[in-house]
Image (cartoon, rainbow, N blue to C red; front, side, top):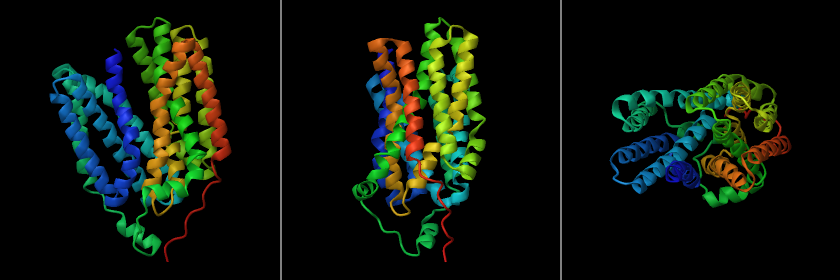
Length: 356
């Protein structure tokens, strides 16, 4: 089990390692080409998953899918940030987060169906087919170089990634830290619900059903959340989302039955769904017109570190004090994340004037 967990964690590690290089790569070759390259890399990595003869080869291949995910995620965020008008940005990015949630919800069911006929390899084939279809869809997208040049009125000047990070360090060490806390709390919910269900003695089928219901609630709120962000500002979504997630964590150790656990899991889904697209939107708002992808790579590094570190934090506190205190600790982290969002999210940005 420990070795299997390490292999799964390789994807998150690959994503963290790939964030900064992804920004540099996207700046140099463009968002569309970067996404195409990422789909090619993930296809090769998934093919390797099917044929590698040992578990360490599998771990390397899974890590490569994480690197590809970093490039893909950053390039698509940078693409939408450029292509969508500012007054629609939050709705666009929250919709992006929402459809990703839908894919994450139905993917395991399609994978389970494929595994019924192909064994464990069926899950990798589902991912591989999805990557190929994504690649075909990307071929219809236009490049954004002409849009960027028209907005700036001149050819785009490349800056070094180090210079971009240095120039925007005040944002990264404040709002970026807030994104790290948000990522940690969000990721912990995927760990604490199954662990508490195990603590209560629930079987795997019941636990899966509870988690699925939570995911269903999570999927329903992405467009309303984006609309609120566009109309009233980002704080109106980010702070309530973290407070609801914090409250759900604090309530979880008080549950002692499947119905009570289901109610708290639904509350977690509500809180997570409220925040659909918030990190991508905040990153897009803070990113500069020149060096946008490089800035987003650094900003996503904070969020992805939180995503990867949240479960490890739960494990560490559990080892020291037990599962209940670990869940309460993540609830307090959610309160801290809400405070950071309230303190560091700037006022709603004004739309940029049209070129010319």
